[in-house]
Length: 454
Image (cartoon, rainbow, N blue to C red; front, side, top):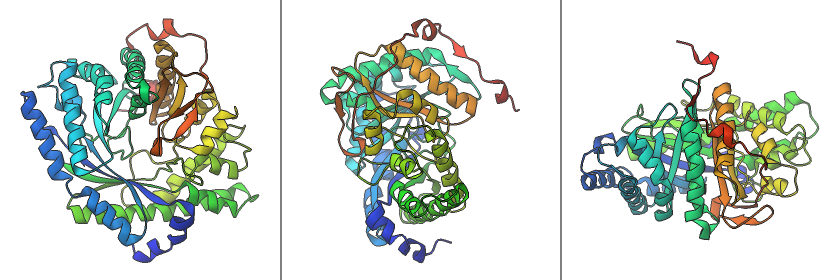
């Protein structure tokens, strides 16, 4: 039972340490919207979303005001559109029309993002999957709030290298079509290995087919809170360090549990999960890199950083899992470069490299996230970076992702600016040696031996 006094204990966290509920995300199934006629499909989708989420923003704001903890984002995730549009959409342009419908519905109900413009192709691609993937650059150019995610691999199925190679081209095309905004389209496009069905965070959120018709998922975040409590145990041993993170994660997650249950009650929508992730923002004092610094690193990226991140991720999960009835999503620590001011600075001065970030993804919640790279990076190199990250997820039975932004017209050291929560950062160098002969082989990398558990 969550009691109000548990929320009141967090007042200092809200006032001084940037504690917030990062997102309340309503998952909506669109399976009952399927129709063979494109216009009917779009009307069904618009009507279902606007009817289901008409009170989402108001309720999120009301709860935040009443409990004194800000709710930063209200969002929607939907059934992967490649599944929903397969019958009606016979071309990439047909799928773009669905994307515009999603965007219109998101604007109507007032959410800042809608996720689920997605395809799950970890083992192979249907014609609908391929058409949706081919439509992504144009869809992201024409819409403001639509986010796209493509699942390319899993521990059970291996890695679809045909799709990996294709996504190298799609990411570059998305960058080109939005080059006037520093290739912003790529900030709303992520590729996954082992994606969860209940992730409330963008750009990777979609509503899994095993979920209820509607669901409420909450993501709560407090990097500033963790950094502050660690400053009080500076120099203590690892046992004290771990216990401090774990106890703090418990308190932060209790806030998310309360918000999720209350939003569920007021919206008359079942409670899904609380995502325990520590998600940074460009705000000063809201940084994963600052936590790593407080743990003893001069800058994020210094030797020991991967071990520190492993500790942080594990203790957040241990503390949070006891604080909520249902824990899900990604749950752990995000390491986006542009969205974390201190992480971006570490990259700028050379303490943090792309290769070190890749090592850190072995122990964090997601993967290579919001990394700006030179706009002339070859599509085959981007595909190789994706393949590396998919392999980490596949072998380690964890979720990994890549959200990488080749900024057209800019090179290493130039600044890419995306605004708002997406932040800014200097463009990072990429290994100059090629991998075209590898990524152009085609086919599928088989699942690892430890996937055979049936």
